[in-house]
Image 1 (cartoon, one colour):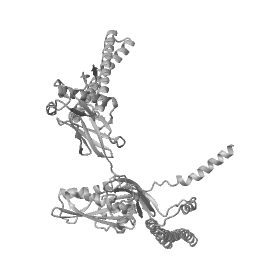
Image 2 (cartoon, helix red, strand yellow):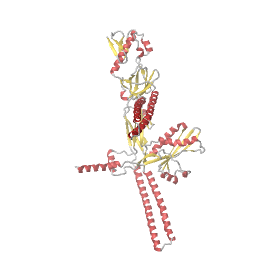
Image 3 (cartoon, helix red, strand yellow):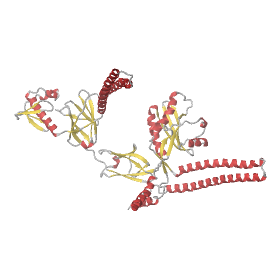
Image 4 (cartoon, one colour):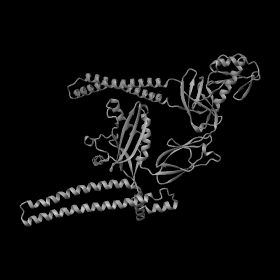
Length: 602
């Protein structure tokens, strides 16, 4: 039994190893230098600030989670650079050894000793030559691998594999540590902020020069962001170039034009165009299938990263990576998602749009305060008899709105999508006051209690120190008992005051946190049946009292102007919540004692 368990454990570790070997901690470093003005006379402080700010803004717009796909050509450039650097170093060593061998004859060596030293030098020279030959062999091998990988990568760029072919490919590469023809490296910024200061020794050197290439490789910078600025009147033209190292190739050149107030937008546009170049992603083909029957595809708008695609029936070509996809159609709810599209694949997106359904619901304030409800910018229709209640017609989606009283006080609320139903009665308990002032007052009280606590600790520490010293003196036969006792009493009193201040601080802290939480919109709740019944009874009684002229306190419940209009009613019926109330048919009287107590008398 133990042998079988051990065998199973070893098999599990063996088959898990390829999964664990997937982790890659390689980094791809990007840096940016200070931009330069084409007009060299721009030396003022504003121009200097612009030159430093623009590269920082562009780097901030780049997503730190970008993954760089390193393909065979870039990897070969790195290998070629390292091998060339090694060969140059070996050649310099070989040159030094040959010169040393040739100089041996200048020394006064005996023939046998000279021969022995020359053999030693020949041995060292041979070792260096062998290393150079190995280096050249590695270069030839790397060139062949690069050609094979590049050829394989170019074949069937958009080949759609079936499930069986995918399974065969998995089995084929299961025991291989090189699953892909390209590696992935996480983007990181040079020295965290990404800014690189060009040393004085490189001033005047071109970005593709050998000196610049060596400096970038030594600084472990994979790509350098450079830029030039041209100003004409109030307009600025920004041109950004991207250089890849080693090799010093310019892999991108992007320009944009705008005014100084558009710098943030211009940097966002430039960064958005740089992202696919930096990630070095393979294009992805995406097909969209709208499943709704009878829908006119010309009315459906497809947005990919806020770029509109009107005609998507033949597919959309995007760069691999994370994209935000959204579909919008009049009369239907918009639908969107974010997804990581891996290169060298095809994707089918099936979309089922839901029709917009306008639903009517009522929402009321739990307090009898007159006002209007707003929902997603739509004004609710105030109830004729209950001024704290509104009817809202809105689409079937989450409501974020606010209530504004007749005195201008307001508070925010929200209704989740699952609570939006036709004819639903909702209630929300809102506190109408200036929450900013209230939070500020609670904050001041909290800090005041904290200050009291800190001040109270001063006498506590002083009395404790004196009490401790006097107690030790008395125990050693030098102190006075009564003095030590007085300090002990003072210490206990100080501790009591500090504890009280600590409790006060904890209380004020909780009150402050509760007050700060009040700024969050309140969630609406369902109105209970007993609340609706109580509301109906109150309205019935108030209508009867209004018609009989005995109403005294109904002015707190209804608008006075409405009461004047309704007071002219002498007979007939009044519609309350869908019920017809006859002003003379009932002998029962409802007496309203307060908001929560209702008493019925025969």
